[in-house]
Image 1: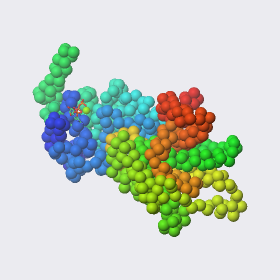
Image 2: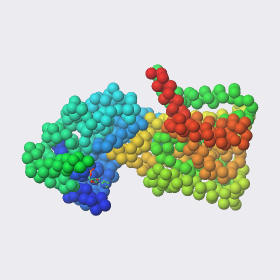
Image 3: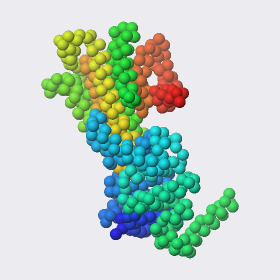
Image 4: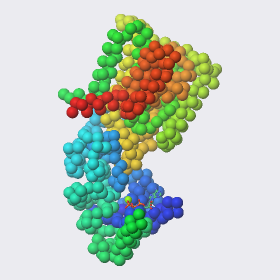
Length: 262
Length: 318
Ligand SMILES: Nc1ncnc2c1ncn2[C@@H]1O[C@H](COP(=O)(O)OP(=O)(O)OP(=O)(O)O)[C@@H](O)[C@H]1O
Ligand SMILES: [Mg+2]
């Protein structure tokens, strides 16, 4: 049975169909990649699934329950977690604190216990801190733990976001361009990390422009163009699909044309 | 053992309270000192709301007004001791902060600023217009706390100004301790997270509306207790305690000292309370010099005095 089902999801911004009637499924342990040219609606789709945008129509089903329009913090409780294409880092906090923040649901308790620094509060914080250290180790950021997050490179912050998202122990993980801005070595590390997380049974929905990475690790591809799903299937089949080739070549041609003009 | 920055802050504060009197030219300065600590307490509340949780309030003097007038009115009308009245005032402030905060904390940035400003003005207007109850713009007398005579009976004799210096100083230490506990706690992290990125905080499960409300209520209680202390120390209170200028003063002190840090906030309270006294040598130009100092601090020390200095010394130490 699928863990996440997207059924006819649509949204418009001022009459523009950013996403239109998109459906697909995601099973536990599976990696599904959403690909498509710039502006195809991938991030918008993520924003609807994660409760940041309210869909105009359609449904998001998580583990058989309708979670359409459920607030992001409640989706987090149900095991849905994500990263952001345009980094959303807690800049004024240290790298370690950013990772601990991912444990909010596990470490959160009563505000008065926190205020009085009661043993219960310290215990929760300690457990979260230990977990965060382990996650930083896993994404290769242990040495930066005490640094202010704002000082890290783009690629490092991408990995920090993954660590923070993993801290929730999600069942479904949405990754929006996790390898953007990373060098070849870092990309490979992220590649391995994603595959490893999927092996642990997490359902992963991935948006990524690095096609080599996408082809290597995805079980299934969903292709968007101008907000609509134009193809889906296993990587080998989809990459042969003439509509997909046309969509990518089309944008390439458009880009070349606009370069020629400018 | 490595001492934490929390312990350092508390030690600095305690040392300051203990040592400052040796430099007081006259007993009048005990009064100034007490005022610094009371302002400091309100400003620590602003640090929680603004420095930690990133929310602005330009109406927090409204809660100071509630705390102050609770001390004046509750003993007369409910027959309770003035100390209990201060606690009652804090509870009322918490409830009102909850009711007011729910709708207005949905607003962001300057919209929230203006809405909270409206709340402060409302409280100040009620206090000056309901003259039959509150004594109106002329103010109203407040009972003696009576703690000093208790201490006197126990063999600890202090002058009135010495007592208020010590009492408000200790209250500030407690307030600072609680705020410092919060900073590194799960709640404090969630506040700072939503301050950094509301959308990311939501996706890690932070109930942003609830956490903002908690910060608002807690900071309102700080302001309320500061207002009560002001009333108790002066034995008299006017609606000015809830006034617009007092709200702005709280925020200015916090920002000037460094809104993210408790020590900064207290430093801000010191500057803006003591500087006007020190600047009396400039006579009628006093306020102009004060304004100039504030502008220069903000231009050259954008994060506030204390964080900027800490960064400077840390940078050189490495
Ligand atoms: N909040 C919004 N308001 C108005 N238009 C929006 C909004 N969010 C997205 N859009 C529009 O929706 C379309 C899809 O954008 P989206 O960011 O989802 O694309 P994308 O596939 O993620 O592209 P990229 O590969 O560049 O990240 C674009 O035309 C974009 O301008
Ligand atoms: Mg995108």
